[in-house]
Length: 193
Figure 1: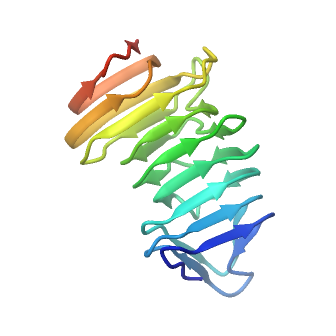
Figure 2 (figure 1 turned 30 degrees about the vertical axis):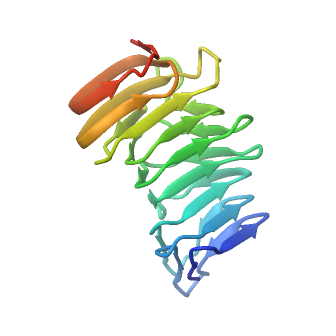
C-alpha cells in the first residue's frame, strides 16, 4: 500500500499489514495519513512500514508491535490509549490530544521533531524510567498543556547536533535532564527539575 502526499486512509478497527504467509508493506515515503482505530497488526508473512513524510494517527486502544519502531509523525487522538512495546524512532512530530494516553513505558524514544502533549504522556509515571531523547538537527519545541502534576516527563535527554530545544510551556522533569549537546531556550517559560 503506497500513500501519496494527500492520501488519507482511515481504518476504524485493527489494520493488519500482511497476512499469515505473504509480506505486506505500507509506504509513506510521499506522505499521507494512516488513521487506525484499533491496533496496527503485523502479519506473519513479514511487514514493513516506511514512514517517509507520512503521519500515523491512533484513535483507539492499541499496542505498537515490535515490527513498527519507526514513524515520521505520530499522533494520538480521539480516546486513544497507545502503548509502546519498544523504543520508538520518530523523525517528525509527536502530538497527543486531550483525552488520550501515550504509554511510553521504560523505553527510550527518539524524537527529531516537536513534542506537543495535551493528553497523558506516560514517559514513566512518577518514579518511572522512560526517556525522551530530543535529537533533531533543527529547532524543536516541547509543550505540555495537561496540568495534572503526575503527567510530567520523567527523563529528558537533549542531544541536538544543531538547533535548540524551545519550551512552549512550563515543563517539569521528574528525574533526569541530560544535556549532551544543544541549547534549551526557556522562552518565558519555566523548566522545573
